[in-house]
Image (cartoon, rainbow, N blue to C red; front, top):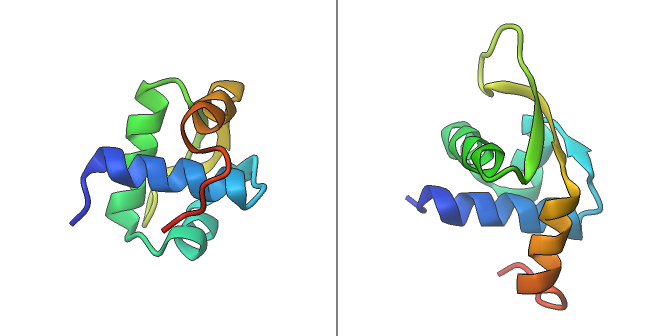
Length: 88
């Protein structure tokens, strides 16, 4: 199992490179192939780092959020660390 930080980075990279400013859990799963727990933990980590804004789910089933929006800081983080690199 990947670490939470690695999952968070995978999510940010996938959303930026997939041109998704906002996504729900299923869209993130399609982009990353992460499991729902890995997505939930990665998104929580990103929220704690102020890289995303969450719309909480009123009744979480698979995901603890309804959708997530990446903030400008996430784009800066991606640009500073991964600009020009592909997801592998």
